[in-house]
Image (cartoon, rainbow, N blue to C red; front, side, top):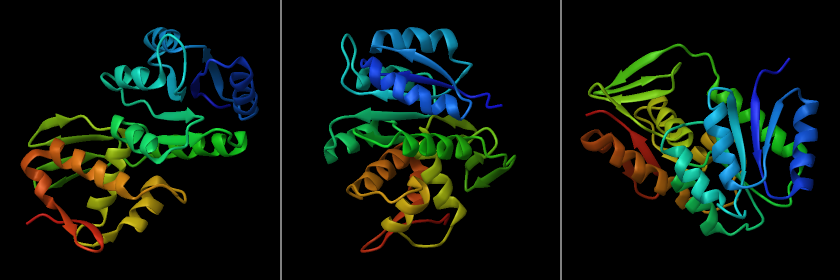
Length: 225
């Protein structure tokens, strides 16, 4: 029996029902919200229960971006954005705000469920390990990052990108390889989304951000010197 609760936020009742039906088939528990304000209210009441959020962008009262910003101020819960707008800039904007996945409508409900399962698998991987890299401490079990003993808040995607870089310490990684391994599927958007994430990670790591080197014409490499 699946013990994960999914919060589905969309102003279209038909869309919520479609998504819910497919998730329930996989034994997920589903909570629905018809607008942004209701989503925040439900999240506050069930924050310890909700394992992932499917969040529509265009909604009345409070749009998806606003909901995302507020939730990211206090939680790292995985969030998949659902939108009818498939523009590249929207995707980049979403990733910069801390989105873990981005799916444009119309989409296959089966693919959506597969993405949900992939994200949950990554976030719940039982790796009970703590490693230190030149003052950067990564706890794989708690999915936390510390710099010189101080906690650093990161989105799921930022954490996974940093983890992939340190796991391949000293190896120059191309943008394509990073996309395929961190985003975990064939990503057809602009690889600049990686550059955006790297910039944010470097900023959050402070002086330790220098460990992430830009390899001109290739991609990036993590190396403690």
